Length: 437
Image 1 (spheres, rainbow, N blue to C red):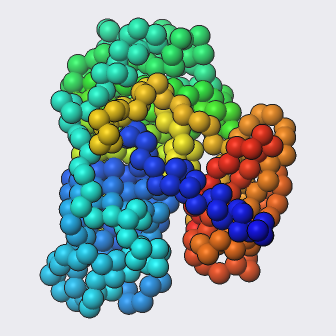
Image 2: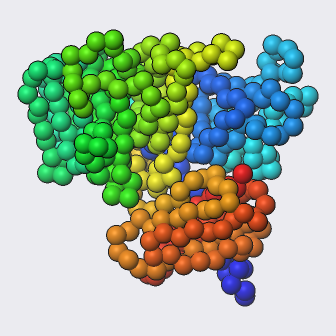
Image 3: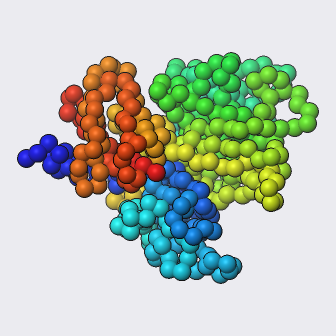
């Protein structure tokens, strides 16, 4: 048997495990939405997208250039919805290229294979505070983590390295706690549903981003008051949960009593790293008329929510607010934030909510990729792994070894879907789907 044939035989069962398996964690999805949603030309969804309601996917241009691209697309309804060219008529279709429309759901050839890439009529995933098991996160914080039972509305929270800092008023004391000292890295602010907290990570010039896995939950509204960054190579990952409130991009006020790292800083391109679970509320900008012109708001991780609201206004060449740019943290294929809520996958058994599963061997920098495919080993132990890049026919197109970082030259490869296989010295195998655009 040839080396390539052996790799393909070894790969096929793993595709069913590492790519198609449904772990039952809400963090599995780049976007998981309970209400209707829209996707347009230029959308690149590099992680799973799933909807309990109508998926409107629209292309205004003929041909396939720049059409909406999805890692995978799943809806509980039996069709997707798009619009006929030069009309306002919305039609439904069971095809990734509805006839007589401009829409090609990309990568089209893969979507034509159907499930799990293009999946219609899937089960709905529960939403709402009566249906989502957020209590497992809350009780983990009470019993083994950190739970605040009396926090003023408007409290500001800063995450730094393996610590969390709270300040209730602009001139009040700073309360600091080390997450690494907790039995479980779970924090809960047990405030009222109408209360607010403001959150950011410490600015890069003042400290390190989040370096530990941590989940932070609360009952009320969450205002993102600045960049939220974690350090993936150091193990940083964040789950952010609100049970009854909204998550909003805070408006930078004209006058601000808070100073330095505690001030709201949102009049710029922003990065929000984490898995965000909004159980009963929505995601929006507090003031979508600012900044002007609009800036990019990159969501590196995933978001699960009942509904989006307004984050941006567009009028001709004028723009206001925030363009949302989803970017899936590829580690979420294999791990989830600690004690992040789970749902029943249909087996009658929920996943262990303790959080982190088997660690991925690799981190892929950029997926979809172009002329280069950059890979990082996630382990701190310096050992050599074997890496293989195969096309969907099983033909090996690249082979390499890696101890820390490797760059595969892929400029000559045709666009399409590939399988990346990594093998550790002790025989552990993992596979990843990667796509060249």
